[in-house]
Length: 204
Image 1 (spheres, rainbow, N blue to C red):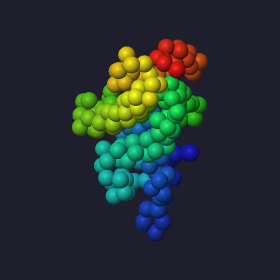
Image 2 (image 1 turned 180 degrees about the vertical axis):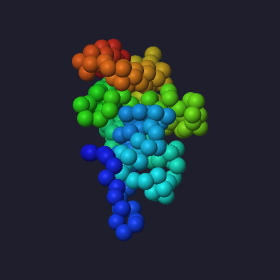
Image 3 (image 1 turned 90 degrees about the horizontal axis):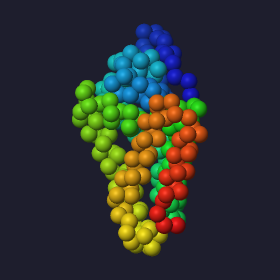
């Protein structure tokens, strides 16, 4: 979707705006620049609203970012939920890794993962926000651990495998894909990483 400053005044009052579209535009700015790199001027311009309107509708910058994260998880990370529904542990990994490639290496959206970008960048300006991003990641990883524990109980993973350690390996590869995609790695190279990791997957 196009995001630009289109706000005008009629009879002295700011034109009404669509909060959902404005939030989608804010998400793109955060995704491109990270939390610290996104200025209020860039956000209001992209959202097509004034700073008072932003505060009135979304709260401060941190509150806006949390709402953008919610939207990001609903729309861009929906593949995570589908991955956890896969019939095998390897299927879970395959859906997660290929879903990450589609999201972080696509031609339309910004490169990289919003959560990883912001977790790295928020340490100085907003340590509490960094902790918030980390808490979301921990919650997501816990869901993967639980799914792999079920897989092991069902005999889908070898007895020697620690589901938590395997989930951490998978998460590390997922985060690495996001970082490398933001750094300019080609889709082809990252697909090779995914294929290699899946070839080493324990069990079926």
